[in-house]
Amino acid sequence: GNIRVWGDPNGEPIRSFVLPGSDPEISDSFLASFALTPTANEMAVYSRNGALRIVDSASGDIRSVIAGPDQSWPGYAFIAQGEEILLASTDGTVGSMDWRKNALGSVRPRKVGDGSVFAVAPGGKFVALGGETHGLRILRLPRHDVHKLLDSKPHGGWSAAFSSTGKYVAFSKDPSGVSVWDVSAGALISVLGEHAGLVSSLAFSPSEEVLLVSGSVDGT
Image 1 (cartoon, rainbow, N blue to C red):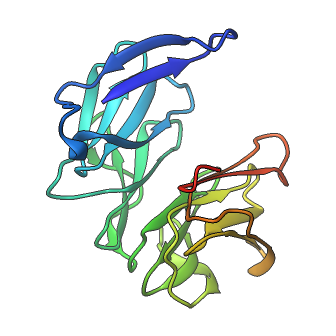
Image 2: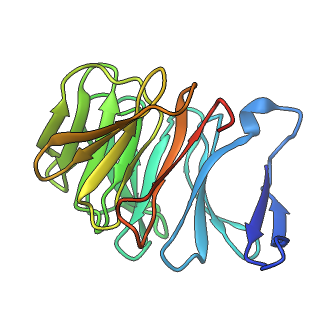
């Protein structure tokens, strides 16, 4: 449950705090992932037990609780100016919430099929989903219709990411590797296979659209 905020040129954290309710002896309370708002004033923090909380980046205070262990939202990303968070549930539901009011946002909840892999394009108009039964899809929001079906085969990856302009999307592959797609053409343009294990995280450079960073459970 320990969060560190980095920004010191000497490589030291500029602040560190522990989320309330975190217990280092309980593995389910471990933090699995997080995302920052565009202003970096708040962050969304997802725990292994399914809890998704909005946290003040400066103080560590919890601003809002989006979900608990009874309803898990492992896919999430801030949209608009950061006042809304787009959510993908383990039951295949995609929708958004205004976390400041704890109320529904501009994207109404709707079941779209399993979405174990989730990423939001810049601008929040498209979402990439990958799952065991519906393959790789690009959905158009807020209507939830399929913009592109990239691959109908089951997908067991863990991560996805859009490039800075939304032109490309990358998906991790099971058991290893990464596939990169041209979104508008719906075409596979590259398969990267340097990892020996499942790729757990992906990110494109904000300035170099063809630069992609990947991290794997094999430690590379």
